[in-house]
Length: 76
Image (tube, rainbow, N blue to C red; front, top):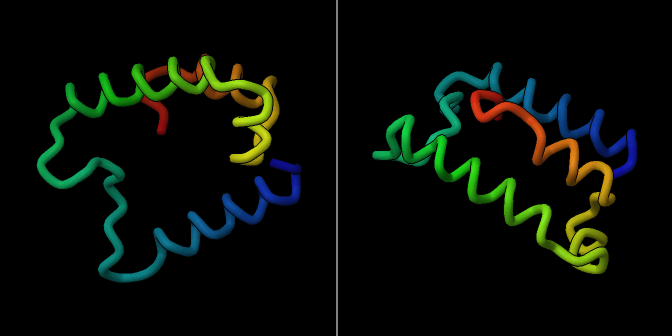
């Protein structure tokens, strides 16, 4: 993503948090904290395994993928 896309995404997420009735808990219904933890571990590992073409398809660079993969498990 470009820096502008990141800003737009952040602003959009903030707007969603301010809407009454919008769920702010990002876990899937029925998902406990351990399931959420393992899901984050698994998906962040898979992100590192994507090819450059696949990363371009989702709009992120290799560096952004590495930064996301290194994020602590407690951060969304």
